[in-house]
Length: 75
Image (cartoon, rainbow, N blue to C red):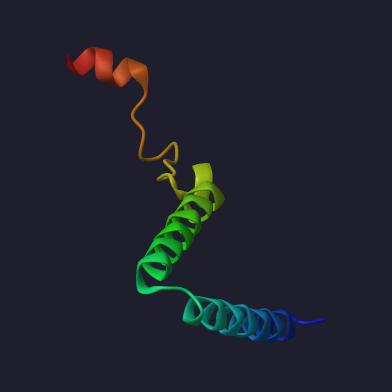
């Protein structure tokens, strides 16, 4: 299975999940809907942050990093 096929299947599942959520939100009162949307948003943010983890940090190569000796000699 190619990555394009995986992406299209994932997109279809996301659209279906969104439709189910919209149907559910339609049955709630406006206050309960707002609460549920906020909770879902907070969950999505938490998962997104956790997924990025350490990979999102700026990577520094040895070329960009000065050695301790060069820093000591310039100080």
